[in-house]
Image 1: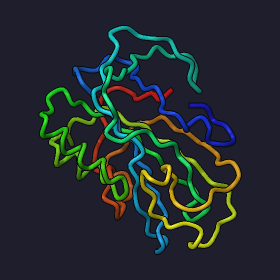
Image 2 (image 1 turned 120 degrees about the vertical axis):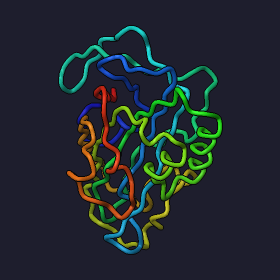
Image 3 (image 1 turned 120 degrees about the horizontal axis):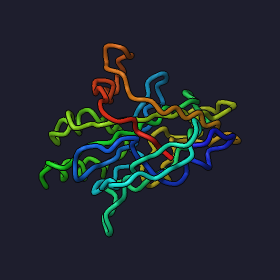
Image 4 (image 1 turned 135 degrees about the horizontal axis):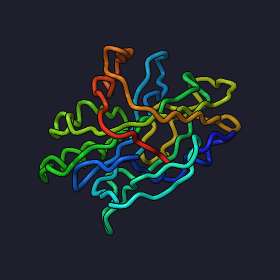
Length: 222
């Protein structure tokens, strides 16, 4: 991802890959906004921005340019005709507290997932708001199949509007925006890093994904 003023670089689904080949024959990627505003601040909600299954990894590396230089990356590709359980929605934080939103991406090994397991993901993706990756992946038997992760921040420069400017209850019918009016030009500050275990992080009321320790290859978002 490029660090730019404005959030255009995040408005289309990114290409993803790892710097080393990972084991597995089928994968899924999830992206969640952890900081959806509510009408009871500082309480926040979550929103599923993307859930794509049926990914396969290339057997050969591709040289790509990233913010930290050129890297050889094994890219993940969507199987032909494989529709997303939740189509990609680009970040668009509203001018409401919190102005800065954390967008997390998870790579999950679904090689051994049954159709029932995938059905859990599909059913959960139908309701984007209040999405708990930890709960859903546990229900699908995939909580220990998380291979890698990435996160970036998108900040609305404000000024903050009143709660009446937005419901704080965004969903797929509102274009994926996190409720309310956006300011002029969100500032994207992407950070590509593995997650840390819950013991090293802050336990959030949303019960999201801090309990999941990311292992394996570094997850690159291009």
